[in-house]
Length: 466
Image (tube, rainbow, N blue to C red):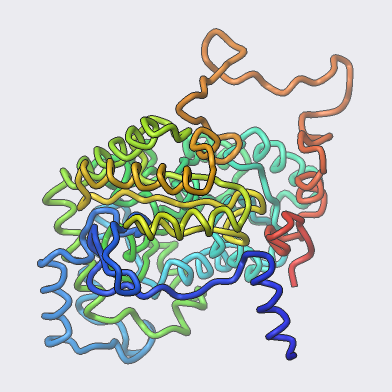
């Protein structure tokens, strides 16, 4: 048996083997999955624009007018009129001075992080950031300091500690998702920006799952927080709510010129294809003309969550379209996924290394093109699947630390602010000198910041980047 065959057998034994599922037809609310009609509940086509007639027509017209491909990188002959039009439209939409298109969200994150941090610098990264951010940190060769998920106090402490240990002149970059793709929770962007200002750090925010889903007119979590113009680099995608393929970075003109000169994924990749760019431009125009699609999406998200709660699932009653149903073990998630497909609902199982070990789940995603009846049906099918597998829906909900429908937030202060970490009076120790986690993983991540997150994703250990 070859080493590859051995590795494949190990993945199968661990319940981590993957295969491609064939979807026939466009990414609508119902698709044919391996020839079977199912309700699609795991697509990132949040606004239902991937199969909108105007978006299709724009792609077809662009193919006839500009061809199927750009033919070269952006810096050679690959920058075409349609690229400039979309960049101008996105800059206006984001309220930024300039915009730069990339081939994918993965390339955009690799490009911006490696451009803004190098071997002598430090990157502060939320522990649940997307893999493209993790790999961007690795590519930068900067010291990577991982702070606890959404924990601004831990971030601020980590930055103070780094400034005490290192030359105050080195560059520091804070990078975070705004809406986290697997949990659907939102980063505390205003507090992060405040910390960045105090420590003279730059901030890069990935809005991949926020554009089209949150904020006024679907303009994202940055706009929702009133931080337009306060973020150094905003990364967005064309492949989710905008229904096409590709990505962009919005920033000021100086930053954009800098990225053109140093962002390797931009310099060494063929430019996005004209049909994809034109499709995204049409989708952006639709979003601006018809912001009610965002409201419809959020109404469907509420309907899905309430239907799940009525079936006994432990989900919160809000309007975020990403709904994690955490089952824990890999096999349980795979069995639940298959049982749901047999009932007519496709909700893909998500397993390590995409999520931490012990938090395998179904990641549900509502779309604006769903109906309220679709959401009720989905909840009914998922509940029947759980019962068939002898699973208790009340034990299936968000990951540890996220509120469920049965949780109540308990604050130690009458004004509603969370209680600070207590430090023994007279003790020289600061919060996080002895980290809150029992196993000390995050203490190692801070004490040895050259470690990159997720080098050993399955067991949650932080180890030296290759």
